[in-house]
Structures are given as C-alpha cells and as structure tokens.
Image (cartoon, rainbow, N blue to C red; front, side):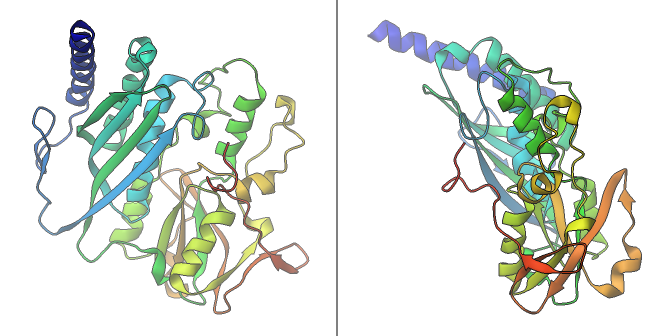
Length: 338
C-alpha cells in the first residue's frame, strides 16, 4: 500500500510538472500576477484604475464533451475559452486563470499532453496566464476553470442596463457551434478537427476585442455572452433589466446549413435561436449611439436583430410582422442534459 501511495505521489508530481511547463510557455505579463505556480496559492495585484472580474466555468465529460469524439487539444482550448467569454461580456481583459482537473490514470499520458497543448494555445491566444489550480484522479474527466480579468473602473457593461427603445445586436453568426456538435454526434468515428464546420464548436474564440471596444467607447448599454442559445440568454438579459424584446426572425444571422453534409433537414433558424456554445456577444445600444456601431469589427459581423420593449414579453417577429412568444429551448443542464 505504501509503495502504491508513493507511486501516486510521483505520478501527480509528474503531471504537475507538465502543467507547469504549459504555464511557463504561455506566460504573458506578470505585472499583476506576483506569484503563480510553485506556492500554495497565487498572489494577484489589481492594476491601478481597473476593477477585477472573477468568473468560473465547469467543463464536464458527458455533458460538455465526449471523450471518444472530441480531440483532447480542443477540450483544452474550449475549457478556457468558455470562461474567458464571460470576461468579454463585461468588456474586460482576461489576465490569469486557475485550473482544477480530475482525470483517470489512463489519460495522464498522450491525452493529457494534447489537452495541455490546446490549453497552452488558448492561454497564449487570449493573453491569460495559468496561475495555479489542483489535480486529482477520477473515473470521468472533470474540469473547472476560474478566470481573473480586469475592466477599467466605471466601465464594466452589465446585463441590467438595457432600456425600452434600445436596439438589440449580436456578433458573429449564430448556430454554428450547435451544427458542429450535431455533426460530431451523428458520426460514429472522430471527425477531422480542422473541418471548417466544426471549428466554432471545437475552438470558439470569444470576441474579446469587440467587448473591450464597446466598453471603452461606452457604446453598449447592456451586454452578455451567448453560451446557452439566444432563446435562453436573451430572457436573462431582459429579466436583469426589467424589460422585454422583439426579435425579428429574418434579421438573425443564422448558420448556413450544408445539405451535402447530411444535415440539410436541420433548421438554420432553430439552430441560431436555440443552439448553445457560440460565445458571441448579445448587446444593446441606445438610438443616439447607433451611428457609431459598424457592420463589422475586425472581421466580426455585427447585426441588428431587434428592439428592447417596455412590456416584459419576448416576441419573435416573422416576415409578415406577426409576433409570437419566443420559446426558450436553449441549453439547460437540469432540463436537457446531453
């Protein structure tokens, strides 16, 4: 028993050493991170003139990814991207993160190496340094990421400031990630991770620069990220602001469903309304500032999709101008677990 315990301790030490190498390769600026991996806890010093953003996110096998179908490097990338998206939604910049990782001993070799490869790429891409965390052994893979971000004092964009008459916008194209998930689930074998139809699902890139720009220029009155689908996230923004909304179905930038891929029967509007994992921005703008909103920002489309209303109802407006209640069919882990 003692030898077994010593073996486990050595194995964990080796895992931690590999994680630390990933952190070293992804280091950005240590101006705010005074002490990271190597001590019992990290030391963080907020930048002068900034407020601190704290967020965390679970990424669970069987719920958020499938071990036998999702590439390990995509799991590493996406577990950080999901949490970073919350920082983008407040107009902030991610600075560092903590990683809690539970995995079986069978996945401490090649799978872990590929996971750390994807995680390291994401850390460098988003400028977010690994500051520490925890590891343990478990039969299934559980990942929790906690991100520390910053936003200029007085400039965080909240969900609660939308007002009647504000115009509703989204970034990017909606439903692409859900389409990618359907393609993965439909195929019995693992697909090529470089397939362009899978990119949004496997390697999402939250629009950090857009969120920061909207915050710095004080253009967005309210904002949040689209993680659970438009039909699930819009009610949250409206509830926080005490308002309703009219969304025009024909204005929504919906995914183009490739019929040649065997998914032609899928409804692109349904994917755009109810599909999760897009990690785009949903935001409102007062009419006075509409002239300052471009059609795209650094190549990311920005699309007007509706208007905020005083009456607390969510209506989907069809081409004939008729409004029907917008059903909430987005992602809810307690209602529709995968």
